[in-house]
Image (cartoon, rainbow, N blue to C red):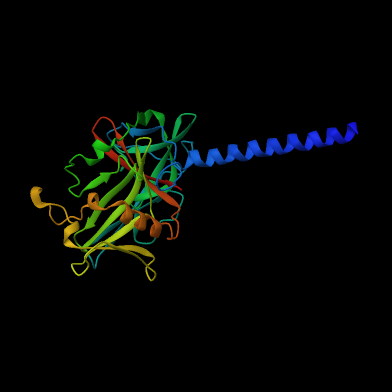
Length: 297
């Protein structure tokens, strides 16, 4: 009888431990993605800024004798242009190309990933576009820079480098949601980058983009998932455009979207193929600028 009671007691204790572990895991998942989009927010602590005027060598590993980041230059005689590419010095240079040591990092602010001995481990970019490659800088060539938190007021404030509107929902069901209007005048394209403001950063999955299309035949906002392109398309009438008091009446006004329209937009975005990266934006002190970088999602 005593043995049976001990076995029963053991089973009860085991079930209690499983329950506690399950709750802990559940809470951990909720804490990691407790925002409107449900994205996991990366923990960012600092950046490093290159302090040498002539730029800094970027190494493939934390060793001074490891390959360097170099620039390829290729002359396109037909187009009369010079094509530029970045790679490591241990990679074979294509024909008709010349390799030069990269000095493009002068004054750059790069995301700090860690440190190894006398080197900073940083997130670098390739082809002048954000990339997830890792490089190493000598600590003597760069200084650590703590980033400053963005606030909703900062994001909505006028910006000389960006005339299109950005809004941040500060209350209600979608508090923390960031709707940032972007455009390409050359191609006549307009879109919304959908993100969230968390821990002083705007975090936006690459897949969370909505294509905008002005259509005066619709009376209200229509949001659909284009199966052919896989993109979310939002058609909108003239009434959804900004007031022309500031001379920018050609912009779609994201502040006019109601909760029902936002809900439909987010529902369609959730059906898209998930991106492997998130675009992050925060504020860098010193020159009052913003830094955009990419991380794995």
